[in-house]
Each structure stands twice: as C-alpha cells, then as structure tokens.
Length: 237
Image (cartoon, rainbow, N blue to C red; front, side):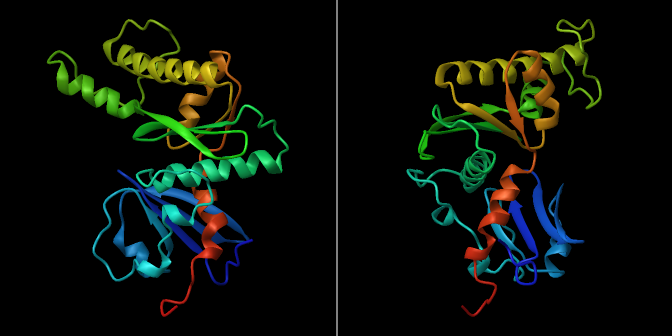
C-alpha cells in the first residue's frame, strides 16, 4: 500500500502524452495531458518513461521506475516499461477479483499503438503484438492517399459501412483493431484486459463483436502506483 505522505505523485512519460497519478482527497486521481514541465515543480514524482525524457532537475533518477522494478518474469530488456506495468496491474486485478487465469491474461493497451501483451497462467511474459492505433491509422491514410484528409475526432458512425469518407476511415480503423484483438484472443484463449486512451472507444466495439473484456483505462498507472513504495523518496538514498 502506497503511503501518500511519502509518494503522492506518479508520472509515466508516454510517446505523445504524459500520464499522471495524484493522491487527492483520500484517493488516487489519474489524468493525461500534453508534456507540462511546470507540473514537475509542484511535487517531484516517482516516474517511468517510454517517450522522450526532458532535461530537467525535477525528474530525479533515483525516483525513476524501470523495467527491472516490475515483477513480471521473462520480460525481455527491450520491453517498454508501460507494457510491463500494465501486465503486472492486470494480473494483480485478476487475483484480487478471483478471475480465471488458466489460459493466461492478454493486456490490450489502446494508445498511440495498440500493444498486446500476453501473460501465461503463472503470470510470466509470453510475447505480444504491436498494431498501429486509431489515430496512427488515420494519420497514415491521410498521409499516404492524396484524396483523404485527416478526419475530425467526432465523425464516428454506428454504421458498419458509412457513406461519408471521414466516418468510413474511422470505421475501418476501428474494425482493424477489433479484428486484430479478436483473432489474438481466439488463438490464445486468454482473458482480455483493455486499457489506454482509446479503451472507452474500443470497449463497446469489442462487446458488439462478441468479445468479453475487462476495461480499466488507468490500468497502467495503477500498476505504477502499486510499485511506488519500491522507489526511495529520498534523493540522497
């Protein structure tokens, strides 16, 4: 259990956004923003990174959580700490909720990239997949086809075959992710945990496709919070 008097702020530096955990009013709050150095000056965080780390004295190296700190067996050294944190967190929630883990656990982190991370029945790392996320797919279509523009964020259509180009791009990108995740689950049979910035957008599509998923958009940050006591709050430690 984290002592908020010692560790009250956590930060994961992502590829495009910074992800925060802050203890306020007797509970943890999570938010996601563009990089903001001014927030580091308020309370130096326990932090981890998969994206560019800025040069600043407020990110103390002794408060950095790395892949070696995450207790998931078999992680290769190239694995992003965000994937390890999410997998660790999903496994712990399965134990807490007494969920069946005999076929393993499949973490789907729907961010800039949809990363799939498979744990075996003992919670060890088995492997995964990396798939372009929603916005990355849309950006690729807009960049690679002269007749296509980057669509707005609010043009999704419930139709499987929209008439409008923007909505058709959104639908195609969504269906690509749903299909990839559905096939991965069919092959491995593992319990799916969904997290990340596009989790809320993907969850109803996965349910509509007949997949049973557990969804917690802040699963990775909850894993970081769980491990914050391992990182010394004393910069001289």
